[in-house]
Image (cartoon, rainbow, N blue to C red; front, side):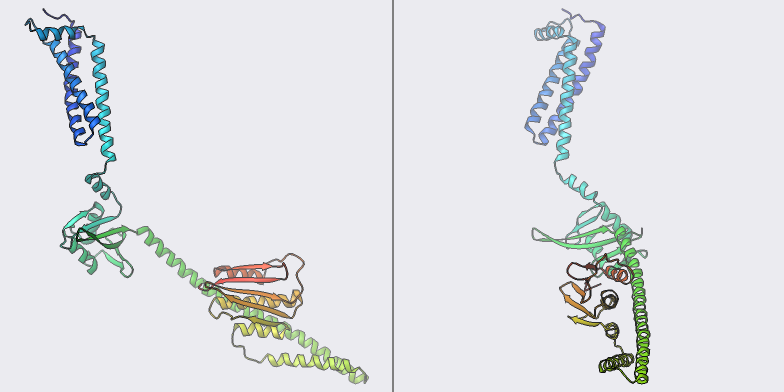
Length: 430
């Protein structure tokens, strides 16, 4: 007998026959990959897809090649194939296609998750730093693209021997446009494209063999920022030196102004004393107490002018001597620092504090307590004068003192809780 189907059915079944052949070979490839990945469940699924696609191909082939020859098996298969609706065959092909796509996707995903020698090599090649591993004989075990590019731009040659390349690094046998920048702490080299690289070397023992490892890293941005920072530091040091000189001149000028004001005051007092003596002489009267007071004031005036000619050895002596002449005793507990800028800042503090003691607190003693710890020098200024009643405004001398302290990396604290105290904390190394 002959199976009856329309021409359109024959065309559709022919296309599905070709498609099932394609699915069959894809299934075989997936099965082989699953076996290579040693995935049992995936191999079974791929084998099922192969058998299903082969069965479909046989059914479709039986229908398409059925002739008048009366083979029993062919007749049976043919009748079964004729009885299958087109949509079922098409749906089976679609399901089989989706299943094989999912299996192939799982193969790709498994390959991406699995670490292989090739994936390790790709990862090393993608590193921004260059890596070179070689045995003492010079034979290269591992090198990535960054190291190959670095070697080419440094020496102009391909990297073929690790020992020869290491000797060139140490002896400076580079291209003329390349140069060694630093070789003390770490080897730093500028190569032909004007980038800066740092080189580190390690020895990695492995199975009794000492593997030599050389790594290079691009530090161009960090190097340029370091150079810029050095330029800024030089400018800051220059500015700081000028500031210290200016502050010393300000302190000296202020001390001279205070001394001049004291001279004017003593001059006026001396004139008053002379007038008092003249009045006593002309009137011929006066108590012994008045005479003794005049004598005492004259002695103070003379002592002041005698002290003016004494040589002042330094900033501390200048400030303490000036305070003494103006009637303020400076009591120092501890050791005054002798290094700059600490010395200049503490001397400025003494000057400002004895001036405030004399003018505002109306006291006659300034206490300076100097203590030290591992990292800091701490100076605390107190006086025996009147406690301030209002808010303290840091302007003039106090403002300058705070500016100097903070520029040196320290801090200044003003407290009026029990008494007026000014605390300056300065780092030992500025």
